Image (cartoon, rainbow, N blue to C red; front, top):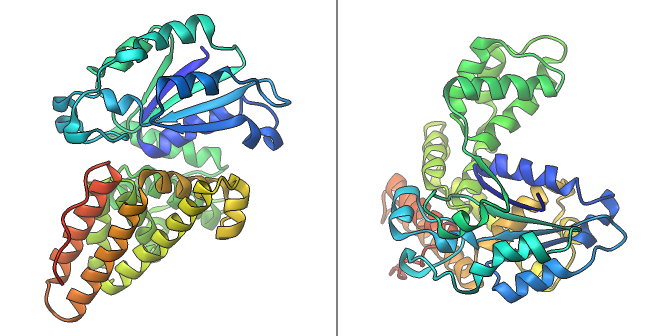
Length: 348
C-alpha cells in the first residue's frame, strides 16, 4: 500500500520509519525526496503528495501530529496526549479530511509513499478508522515479558553476538522495556563480550558504568513527553549519587542542541548540514534531536530554560527539596513534550 500509519514505542516507530525510507531510492537522494509535515492542513498535504520525485523512484511524505488531533477526550485521558496539539484534548471535526481515503486510493501518485507517524493512538480515533481501508497500519507497543526477552535475543543475534537467559533477566530488571536504553546497552555489551556470550556479570559491570547513558536517556524521555520513563531514570540517577545540579546541567546541554536544531530547521537548513553544525554525525541521533525540536515552540524552549534556572537556583539556595524540585521539573517539562500548555511562571 502507498500509505502507512505507524504508531507506538518511539524506538520501534523509528525503526519502521527507517525501513520505509529505504524504499525511496539511493541514499544520496533521500534528503531531496523526504518531506516532513507537522499537523498540516488538507491542501498542504495534498500538494506535497502530488509533487514528483527527484531522480528517484519514490518520494517519502511523513506526517506527524495529524491523527493525534482526532483522538477523543476519553482516549487522551486513558492513553495520554498523543503528538499533535489540541486544546483541552477535544477531537477535531473531520471536515475535508473525509476526502483523504479517496485521494489516497484514487488520486495520489504511485510514486508517493505517505506515512502517518504518531506515538499514541486509540482504536476510536476517527481519522484512523477512515484510513484503515487504504493504509497499512502498524501498532508497535514496547514488548513485555517473553516477547521482550525474544526481542533482546534477536537484537543481540543481529549484531553477531549471543546472550544468556540470566543476562537477559538482569538487563530487563535494569532497563525495563525502555527500548532506546536496551538497544544502547546491547550495542555496548556485544562489543565488550566479543566472541563469547553476554553474561550476567557483563550486564552488572555495564550498569555500574551507565550513569551518563542514563542521563541521556532520561533527558530524551523528558523532551519527548515520556514522563514515567523520565521519572524512573531520574530516580535511578539520584540513587546512583547524581546531584540535581549535574542533572540540570545535562538537561540544559541537550536543550541547547535542540534549540540550535530548531533554529536551523526554521532557516530551512538541510538535515546533514544540521548534523555538521551540531557536531552530530550519527544519523539516528541527529534525527532524534530534530524530532525533539519539532515538538517544542520557541516559547516552550524559553520556558524550559527558565525552569532549569529556577530549579538550580532554588536547590542551591536551599529553598527546595532536591528530589521534589526535580520530579516537578520532569512532570512539567514532559507535559510540554506531550503537547500540553506551559504551567504558569513561578516566583523565585
